[in-house]
Length: 219
Image (cartoon, rainbow, N blue to C red; front, side, top):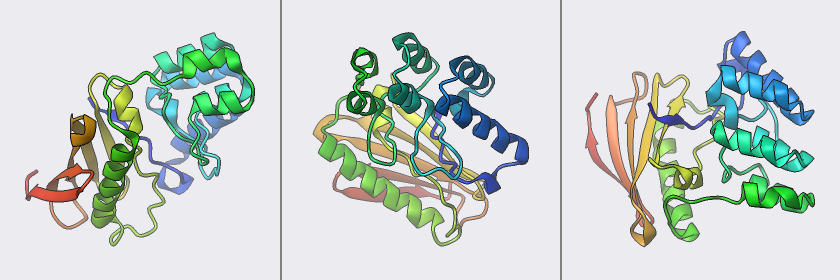
């Protein structure tokens, strides 16, 4: 099963129970109640990188650990549960950047990103820009108020298998995307499915030069 990019920012796309769990997790992380955070993430592992519904800071639990100067063991346990060192908050800070800004030097080594794949950051951001254009081409017209947080690609570089699933509520499908080439020749392959938006399936290949549709109509 692919690792999931958590795109949800609005409570109204979730049933009440799911929204309550996310609010509880955000509250526990903000108050540095790490036993409660670990309990909730153990119940819902996919939420380890989730941010507060309706929030503006985009702090995931690992950002909160960095902000509060949590023990290094707390940060390490979150990372072991799947927290990404490269996930950005609304200011573009990774957890290590938050820890450095707040003077929590004991966390810098634990939070420093460990890359399994290497792509120049400028190349990666170009690929991400073109990937977002592909996504918007699929969903913006039919779901103009989706309010989704579109995928950042840097977390892929932390994974042994650089592949994720981006579900789109209301699309009855989503995007499976993976890196097939790294370095300056980096290529992202995106396969998307839907039962609402026109077309059953599309495959795109995306590089720093742009994205191109290579297949469609599959299921």
